[in-house]
Image (cartoon, rainbow, N blue to C red; front, side, top):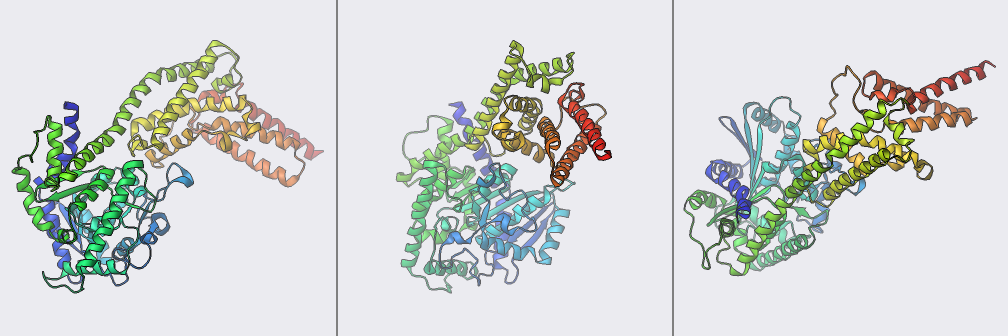
Length: 623
């Protein structure tokens, strides 16, 4: 089927791009150079307009930071990024999401973070980064093993640092080899929202245990010795092992990691939910073997492949594969040009099936009949998950087009109210409406529009839309236009129904969550920038809650009339004067619609009542 045939396009494109360039060869060469360096934690090269920085896989591990393999539970080594990022190095990744206190915090492994901070505080590092940024159009950050985790943190910092750069910043690409997992699912979600996932490519060679290691919830002293063995192997010549490790210890760790990886794969396949402190993949994963490579960007598929490929390995290969990236990279270009034939069985019936089969073969699972079909199904489901959010956006776009006439009807209603002889404006006209056909229709349109946008929010909450949906300009503008036009009617209905007597004022107890989210989206898109100075009044008041503030201000006047305590009076007058100043600034800057100044609007009535109350107060003082 042609629709299915298009599913594999992005996956094959990413893999072919990497293999057809020198990116993998150059970055791995730098990783090898960094690993062989005796004293430096990183090395830097400048190849024309491309800057490269490689991190050693052998940082000082004397404090037990490396993989958090000290005694006790691994999860104790997870830390909320916002709690330790006092300098704002990773701004935008702190997990302050749309759900307030319910939003899961972005968490990373504290050991890797401390290693990064140690390098960041190095003046030499700062100088090298400054030089790279000034002289490069693209910067490749790379690392093997633990160096890959430090490279990822460096890339995250660079992306955060450069996002507000006034001049065009260099493109950032992070390529890791056999890197351990770094952060939780909230980190992956934040990267998707920032549209930074395409800047990360994690290369995994067959059953390399290091990318799977931290799926295990706890690792005791014997696995620590095993990781010391891995580090020793990086820095030693073949056959020179500094730490004695038995085959029994290898088998123990292999089975322990395999069982935990399988458990995580099952959990995410069944519920798509993982605990906050479970480490989670982000970015693109390039699974490579002697047969070729396949690039996967769906996190659930990545986890499943990490399990399936590890299950096809053993306690010896899972360590050996960690040191064979150089050989694998040299062979990959040839394998992509000289693709082997299909394995035994019927030929694929479509280009889509052919792509699936070739991809699974490239992982080295061709001879593993027990998992081959499972891997195929995993890839298919991953592509469906990737398509579903975009298909939902397409459906929402159609639904938005269908309800757009409702917006036009409300705009027509606003215009007719503003031109009405009663000179009340559309807020007060709607609030005091009678049971006319026109008023009932407008209220019905208001309810249908609210239902549409609540459905959008529900899809975001249920992860049915892309994580970067709130950053898509079309939808931010559409939600903002809806909010400015319709929220005044929501406020009018709230006070018309006397809901403030039951719940409290609109701003505190009555405002719908959709409006709060739309405010957040608009602020983030504009990044706090001030809009241009206006010469005429706005078509819509730029503060969609202006009328709610008017209603509160009207109650303040009533409270002043009843209050006898001088301290309370002073507090009430202070609140009144604050609103008075706020409204004056809006009007002077012409950020309000002309209906605010209509002769019989609630605001003008409030202004007149305030003048009268001040005169009465002056007379009381004189007498």
